[in-house]
Structure formats: structure tokens, C-alpha cells
Length: 209
Image (cartoon, rainbow, N blue to C red; front, side, top):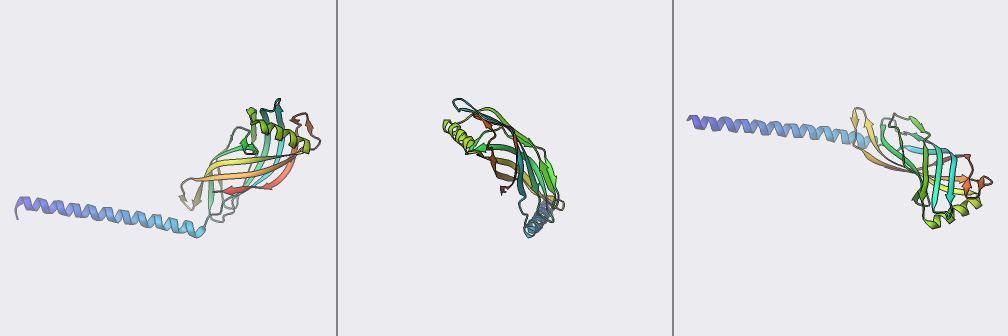
């Protein structure tokens, strides 16, 4: 065998060894990922439960001719992780209020939180908006709601969560929470302004992940 043939033979063996190593590495990684996925599917993570506990209205005022709305509300929201073996990372949670489909406050960022098995987390953020432009018909709706004594607001949370199973942490999932808040204001208004009042709600929220 010539020196050239010998060199080709060594190169072929090296290439074969590299292919076997790459194939083995791919198979190992695939097995690990499959095992993690299998464990994840067996445990079947359940989405967290959210409850809107109460709200304190400091301002809910329309300006003539009902084209601007000023809102200042403190809310208390509780979240419970119902899973026995899965933790939840709340990486980003923005909470805000809407009225008849229109966002009427700025988003308030909640602090990042890790929620262990069966744990409960409670937040009490302020959501507010100063002179937020609203559709003209909404001003009339607000005025009517104040006269009837009840305003329906929707407290919404838009965020990202991750699941933790053992040492495995999943990629980020979109979390969407909608909490209807029927705020009773009978006898607590002045003109087009709602007077300060605290309202116990204990309202279950709709959660999508």
C-alpha cells in the first residue's frame, strides 16, 4: 500500500469516526428531549387559577363632553398553582383595565415571581390612566352606568410563564387572564365622577395559556 493510499485510509477512518460520534450525540440529545417531553405530558401541567379579590376605586372620572377618562384603581389579585409537581415562573405580567373593550389604563408591570407546588401569590397593583381618549359613545355609556349604580370593568393580565419540572424549565408560554369586575357605585357618585370606594369582589378569572 502506497503512502497516498494509507493517507486516504486514515482520512476515511477519521470521517467515519466523526459521523459515528455525531450520530451518537444526536441520538443522545433526542432521547433526552423525548424523555423530558414524556415526563411533561404525563404530569400534564394545569394552568394557574386567578381570582380578583377586591378593588378600590380612587378615580373614575369623565370630562365633558365625555371624550376623556381618568382612572385610578387599586386591585388585589390572587394566583394559585394547582399542580403537585410543577412550578411556574411568571416572567412578565402586565395588568390593565378595559371598559367595554377599550383599554382605559396604562399597563402596570407586576414583579417576577416563582410559584412552587400548590403555592399562592397575591399582588395589589395600582392601574391608572390620566385623560385617556375614549370613543364618544363610551362617555355616554359610562354616564348611564353611573346612574344605574354599576360599572363593569375587565381587569386583564397579559404575560409570559414557564413551567418547571424537576430541573427542566420549559420555554415561555403566553398567559392571558380576564377578570370581570362589577363595581357597584350606587349612591357613590358625583356628576360624572365616581367617589372613592372599596369593593369586595372575589371574582374568578378566565385563564388561557
